Length: 389
Image (cartoon, rainbow, N blue to C red; front, side, top):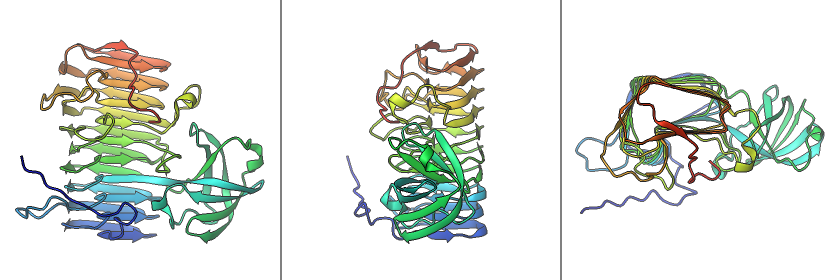
């Protein structure tokens, strides 16, 4: 057996050299471009509006013998607005995701007065990000359950240094008990997303990470990543990437062999806002409506969909096929696992090519509708491997 070792350098310094970097730009288009090598993100856009990538390819040169194209994400969008479009793109051989679209949560570290506070970035890779300007609308959340505490417009902002802001808003923080740990996000990061006819393969991590309150549509794409296919998260405790989604449609895609890597189970569709176990019940779901429709899923592991804290989850007209390419890594899990969702609909899916005796696990989902032939039986079998997410 032959092995190939690659090293992208120390964790704190290995993303310094992106291929393309866009900052506070509008109307950006990257068309018919191929990038073979990047010492960081192949493309990163911060606080931009309306970005289109059409026939943009991140890949190693053919017959080069090389293993890695970009040492981080093929595309990465932070705090963007307007519309982000990925059309007919191909992303291969990255050491991270095909795209990550999100905002930023800062943590409130000093309550200086009722409506004036000091905030810092939760993750060192966000330091220096231009978080807010006067007039922006901020949302304050409880870091424990990601619940909304209130909103306020920025009246004054002082960039003290790369990791500390002093901000004055119209929201009175004195109404929130001192025991509540607060994070704050900028509502300007509200991009709509259209992804179509894209291919993702041979990359270490996920295909698409989608955390934006705008309308999102992923369609007619072919995805085969080592970890999750589409991840929809939101977290104020580790990566501090904001993005309470409102309307996500994932349709007519092919999901190939996935979840061959990662220390915990990786689902084809993984909705996992970072909410601790003791804060998951009773609150308003973090994510809005997520529809997974008309997709072909050909995979080997047991769990294909994991969903936590979704208001309305619809899984319909999909075909699930056991590829038998590898032995299941987490054989005891249910094919669909929904927890603390308000409404779950599983309707008219084709499980005829899926594993025998599979199950669908629902925990604390107040409304559910399971309809169709050869429907797996419903049980309570929550994924035991996820702790915070």
